[in-house]
Image 1 (tube, rainbow, N blue to C red):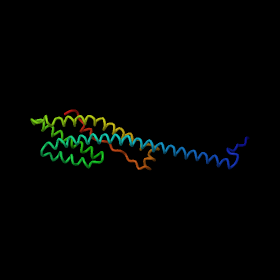
Image 2 (image 1 turned 180 degrees about the horizontal axis):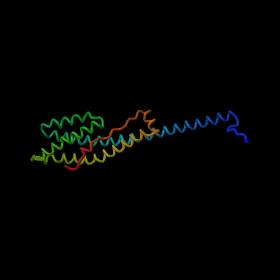
Image 3 (image 1 turned 90 degrees about the vertical axis):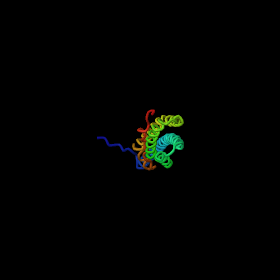
Image 4 (image 1 turned 45 degrees about the vertical axis):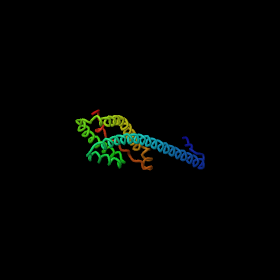
Length: 183
């Protein structure tokens, strides 16, 4: 029979070894936490930059629509949508107003097409269509970034960091029904 050899020669070396292991574990946890904070902040920043691009393009489209509406008479429903956009600060509200604007513009374009002065208004529709084509890519990019960020804040251990930093899921733009091919 062989006697079992002790792991540590005395209590002091056991305490020192356990303290070193605990210290290394704490450093590892802090390193992982710091890495998750940096990653999540970076992903959130990328999504915010994409959202800023989308918002500027949507705002530009609304400005062209406002200019067009100012040239026309009695367009209360279009004016209502345009004025509501000034206070739209959430992705959901911007998406809703974008879809409403698209409906109003579709009706307006059909009415104006029969008008002999349509050539005066067509450059506005052309420019809004051009912006809409750019929006397709920008919204797809933002929605992809937002979806990636949302998946990251749900995954372990990043979900612990997300809770501590009070990070919330990002909403996606829901305007695909309004993004269409050329009228």
